[in-house]
Each structure stands twice: as structure tokens, then as C-alpha cells.
Image (tube, rainbow, N blue to C red; front, side):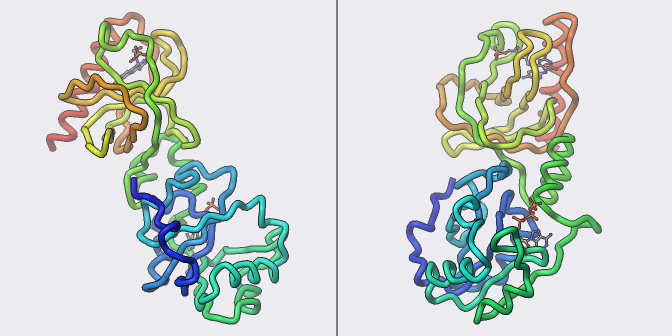
Length: 279
Ligand SMILES: Cc1cc2nc3c(=O)[nH]c(=O)nc-3n(C[C@H](O)[C@H](O)[C@H](O)COP(=O)(O)O)c2cc1C
Ligand SMILES: Nc1ncnc2c1ncn2[C@@H]1O[C@H](COP(=O)(O)OP(=O)(O)OP(=O)(O)O)[C@@H](O)[C@H]1O
């Protein structure tokens, strides 16, 4: 993961900012960043519901420094006070870039017209960005993920959806009865719909082809699990941080009548994943 560069770039050198929540750093957000020029920065207003790129995970998806502001701390400000704060924070500010639906200040009372009145510099308002006629927004990407439509989510994100997790101890059944898996605890990130996915797993900055199961292990202990099996490689160590990139959904989660049936299905899943990567 790229380190946050916001601690390295002084706010006083910033002449243009894009403002918004930016959960996902998706294609429409990237459209805004195209207007930032050489001394740009991103003002990310952190909300509780950000779960595509929560907290500081956003920096990886832009070379512009990201400055985080907690919504709870600024939402009481009037429109005038918000602009005053922004001007104090970025004394050389000449340009603000926002999307067509950007609103700010207490109760989101001010929108783009008020922004143009209150800010004595250039205001760029980007028109709604769509893909195949559908508007690109974080809320729609969350819906795609909840429905298991990973390819659609990735199309809107402009990249493969990625989550971070910590390795945890599994049931100890994988290597003995099925195949070895890395069990993960994933906090903060939205997990796609239960099922089996073709994935890439990143460990210590090394990327491996993998297959990942998400869901309640209905055939064994019934508990919710995120388990990734690295294809063609035996990985034994324990890891504090593992990243999973979701590429394609193979099938639904299922309850099998016997461990043998589940094992046969897992072997079929693995060969589908291998053919995908060999294509
Ligand atoms: C590719 C793959 C597909 C899986 N599919 C299912 C499934 O459809 N239903 C299910 O109950 N468990 C499924 N599992 C989870 C297994 O039950 C789990 O790997 C096994 O219980 C071992 O768990 P452990 O690693 O905690 O020991 C799958 C696991 C993998 C790797
Ligand atoms: N499809 C879009 N076209 C143009 N601008 C957009 C689009 N989506 C978001 N923006 C702009 O990007 C900035 C960040 O917006 P925001 O974080 O609300 O994204 P969003 O994807 O619309 O999120 P949500 O779906 O959760 O409302 C805002 O200035 C917003 O107006």
C-alpha cells in the first residue's frame, strides 16, 4: 500500500482541491481529479458508512495527497464557515473541483451555485459521469457487491475491488479434509455476497492467483468465514495483513451432504480458477 503522502505535502503548496467523500475512489471520482493540475490535493470528508475504501485506504488510488476531515466535526458549520475553514487550511487555494451533486454546510444547505458565490476563485463542476447510461456512484457499487456482481463493481471502480484482512486461526480442517486456506478477519470493508470467487491474494507485496470462499460454512461449523486458497503454492507462515482482489464470481455458497462432496466441488472450483488464469 502506498503511504499517505498528505503528511509529506504541505497544505500551503496546494492550489486546487477536489472535495467529497470519495469512498471507492471510483471512475467518477477520478474524473474530478483530472481537473486538479500540478499542485492539487483531495479533501476527503470521512463518514461512518465508507466501506469500499475506508479510512486511510484511499491514498493508494491517487497520486494527489489526500487530506481527511471527519464529517462529524464539520457538519455543523455554515456554508460560509466551511469555505472559511477551507481557505485557512489551504492559503494558496485558487480552484475547487466538485461534482454536479456536491452540497455542503449545515444540513447540506449549500450546493454548487452557493459554492460559486462563496469561493472567490475558480469552481469546476463536473457533470454526472455515467457508464453505459448508468451513473457511477459509490452507493451503486455497494449494491453490485451485495448482489455478487463483481465484474460490474470492478467496471465502475475502474480497478479490481480489494479488501484488507488479518489472518486468523481457522477450524484446522482445511489442510486435512479439503485444501489449505488462509482464514481472514476483515473489518471495515464491505464484503461481496457469499459465494466462491476467483481472486488475487497479495501477501508481503507479492500477488498470487487464488480462489476465495466468503460465507457461512454451512457444511462444517456454520460460522461466517473469509478463506483464500492460493493456487499452486504452499504458504505456511502467518500474516498480519493480507489483501484480496475480487475478479469473478464462480458460484453460490452451498450446503453439501458430506465432506467428500464439498471436497469434490472445491477441486472443480480450483480447476475453473486455474483455467481462468491460464486463458
Ligand atoms: C474454494 C472453496 C469453496 C468452498 N465452498 C464452500 C461451500 O460451498 N460451502 C461450505 O459450507 N463451505 C465451503 N468452503 C469452506 C470450507 O468448508 C472450509 O474451507 C473448511 O471448512 C475448512 O475450514 P478451515 O480453514 O477453517 O479449517 C469452501 C472453501 C473453499 C476454499
Ligand atoms: N457520477 C458522478 N459524476 C460526477 N461527479 C460525481 C459523481 N459521483 C460523485 N461525484 C462527485 O465526487 C465527489 C465525491 O462524491 P461522493 O463521495 O458523494 O461520491 P458518490 O459516489 O456519489 O457517493 P454516494 O453514492 O455514497 O453518494 C463529489 O464532489 C461529488 O459531487
